[in-house]
Length: 147
Image 1: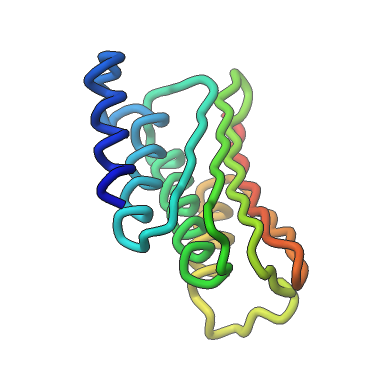
Image 2: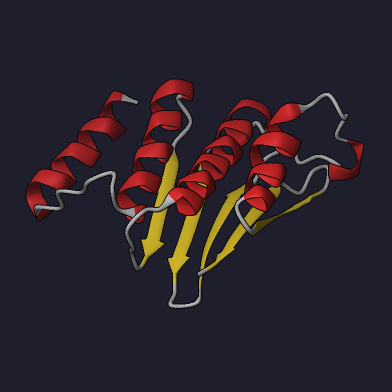
C-alpha cells in the first residue's frame, strides 16, 4: 500500500500532473486511491478525457467509490480495475474485478450499498447503473451519465 501511494506521488511529481478534485479525472483517481489505502487492494484507474465536476458527476464518483469499496471488501480479487471515459454526450465508468462474483438478483433489500449508494444514487442524478456478475465470474459495474 505504501509503495503504491509513493508511486502515485512520484508520477505526479515526475510528470507534473497536478490535479485538483474540481476535475472528474482527479476526483476518480482520489476515490480509487482512498479505497486502495483503506482496504489494501490495488486499484488501477484509467480515465480518458476530463471535465469539470458538477453535482451529478460528484454523485457518479461516489457511486464508483462504493463499487470499488464493495469489490475490495467482498470479491476476494487481487486487484480492481476502473476505466472511465468522458465524451461530449456522456460519461461512463466501469469498475471490474475478477473475484468470486455474486448473483445480483439475490441482493437483500436491507443491503444499502448496492441499491442505495450505487443504483438509486445514479438514478436520482439522471444516470444509470448496471451490475453484471455471476458466481465465479467476477463483477462489472457500469455507470453512465448523459451530458
